[in-house]
Image (cartoon, rainbow, N blue to C red; front, top):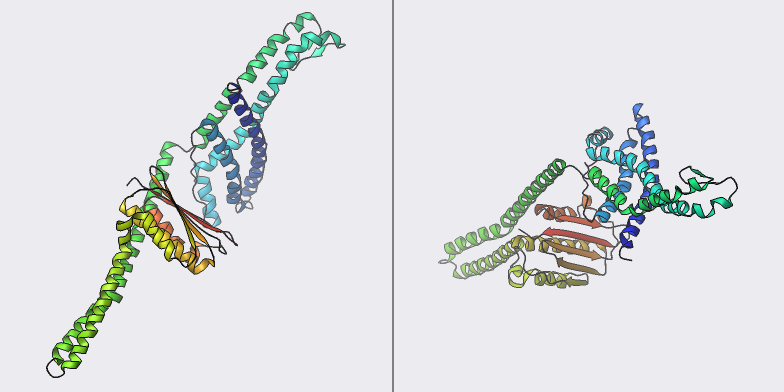
Length: 407
């Protein structure tokens, strides 16, 4: 049974490929119609949408081949946005789109041919091996699967040889399927240079986002200090100066001003602590990320369940980013979701930290509406991480964030 497992896996791969091959021919035909309309300018607006529609089909074949080979096949597309002409120009310049179209053509016909060979070979083998046993019972002889008319024992003696050939072809199905998957990997994976260029572009965008987030954070700290602690300290200096001038002619009033200055200095100190806490919360140093997140969940007005796997201590910058991401997410839930239950999950692998924040609110969260999602995305991007939000109308809302730990 163990020896037959690769054969069955390959047959299943080829059969599913036959279905996607038919869909590829259909998609290629529709794309051809759109391209024909583009010649007269009518199909230009539909071209980006047509390319978007074929990507899921190609992505399915990409994942299917990657699963069969046991190794990932990356994908890399240029983003299609902006005016129609800009999208068309981007689509035309993107080599990934050309690879997709070429794959549709090769797989559309090659996949059907491969399925025909794989599925037809066992029956042809069986028919040719059995033909010598019954050909003489059929008036006029028997025509075999490869067009040979068996009407004598001489020709009947050839069919077992053909049957063995077909049996050999059927037994080679895993090899044929692997060749097909290797072609998919060669064709659908971006070139090494292209992947490097895309990676550089991602890191450039990430660096720009990190610099922008860092600048915004510095402006926030400056604003908090200027409007809060700095103003209060200036008030303390002014109150003490007035008290010094009044201490001889009106000691009681001077004493009252000193007390006010003391209260103002206490408030300034509290605000300074808040600013320091917003830069790096002391609770992270004292209790670690899991303890700090437990405190956030306990303070959240919405009942919040906490699931924390043993993650150990992480780099300080990662712990701070994760803390503020969860704090922002819980703030969003409190302000915007109308939820009555939420959950926070923390997990880690050897080099990644995984954060999941979920609520049962009304959904519909959108970063473009200023709900704090952009800030969370920027924090993740600053560390070359990733944030993904799922929030359909009616809920639930699920925020998933991955941060690298190997800093």
